[in-house]
Amino acid sequence: MDKYISTPLTGEKVKDLKAGDYVYLSGTVYTARDAAHKRLYEAMLEGKEIPLELKDNIIYYLGPSPAREGMVIGSAGPTTSSRMDKYTPLLLKNGLKGMIGKGKRSAEVIDAMHEYHAVYFAAIGGAGALLSKCIKKAEVIAYEDLGTEAIRRLEVENLPVIVVIDCEKNNMYV
Image (cartoon, rainbow, N blue to C red):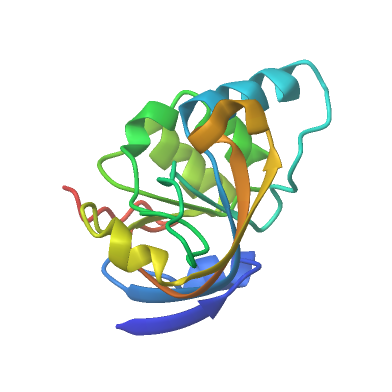
């Protein structure tokens, strides 16, 4: 089923999403990959403030290529999600409601998604140039020293994703 959703991704919206749904996301989405996740995780463990609000937000596992002239962002395809699995349960516990990436997730992440009512979306790997057209604004908000892995706030319009694991543990990968 096709669904059009605007952020924030509230618990009510998450409950309505089922594995296999085609979703077109609009609104604010954040980017973070391995290095940024490690910093977020360590800061949270130390009780420090982190540079983004997790509650009802979505993180896209993305490290975009440089933008071409006249473009907002370069190629914006997903990275392999399992590299973030070590850090994800703590982020979910602190309010993260959605993740966008590619590939399978660990049992621990799936259990945490169920416990904290979150959803995992897949974006189509290899379609980064097409996905970038859905990004209307991109701004580095933290960890600029990480270059492409810096945390960005994106404004997206009808970003196409698929629910691959819903909050009831229904999983398209099994």
